[in-house]
Length: 491
Image 1: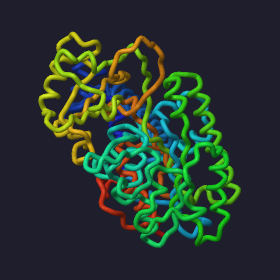
Image 2: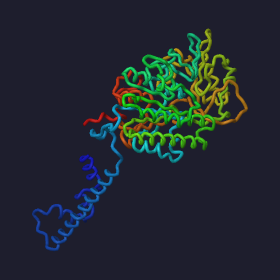
Image 3: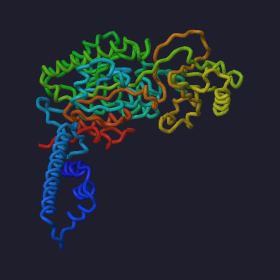
Image 4: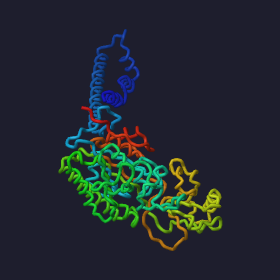
């Protein structure tokens, strides 16, 4: 810190003393002042020189004082340093709990930027006293609910954890996956509740995709694993989590999840800019206030590592922004039986006997012809040809043909005359509208810190680092956790 202050002091001065002399005085005077050896100046010149010298000393002292004052104000008002700027910053010791606890809260469809729609005192409290992804959390592709929630808890991209869409068909056995499928065969990887259970610790899940699946050491225990029921009031969900902290210390779960369906519902129905989105966000903030107040009453708020996040963002859509597959009939016919999902992720599996590469070539020819309405907003790929950054090819469950749809556009089989508007997600995760929030508060997160955006596959390793357990192999980086999570407090 001292070297930074010295650097600021030296660079705060606009010019050096020698420059001041040379710039402010006539050339003859400057040569006399700067080189007096061997010359005898007159008393008048000596007095003038003395006066100028005193003025320079005073001016320099004032400049140095101003620079020092500026440096003091700058460093005293600067935000809290990140862990990278000081080795002394470390986690805060627990005051009441006997072991670390991580609570992940998902607000479905909480698009990054929603937090600025209204005054949200409780969420802003977490931001102000915690760590925030400054430009949002990046979801995995496809930016859909089930693939992303399962990536958060496994650290795996969908191609590796198996949940490649909200709905899909296994091409080998022909079975269909939907959001009520709890057979272990669909759910690959090792979710956090299983990892925690493997280490003899307790986990609890109040709704989370995959949490009801009996897999490995996890059997969805009574009172710690809630079967999904959308009708359960949000307040009841919060209170159930709070009740865990009334248990004896060794029965308090080390890892917890809590899930809210909003503001995703409002986003789909009305689009991301409707006033009802603001109402939903205010309700989420009220729930966070209920949680914080309950934890403070129990004296454990500062001991718990709370991660508030979403699974994806939201973008407005309207029926006039439609690409109809039937419009491609001149180039290639795409029967609806081939299509596993239309939008915002177009997935096509032609039957045996059809060349997927030929289908892709003919579809793109038609889309680029200028004769298909909105054709420029759809690009079709063989899955192996998708951009590598999407990590969406290494699974036999992914259909061979994948279409990337333009932001806010919709693919349908047949064009309709409707003009209804709403909202959607599932698009390329490079679109900023698909980003969500990451806000973390607790003893292992720095106060008032902003971190760059990152993909949600990194969260798994953050949690295992906080709980001090060894995680399963995943697509995240073990070292990345160190850039967000504070090192353990040392006494």
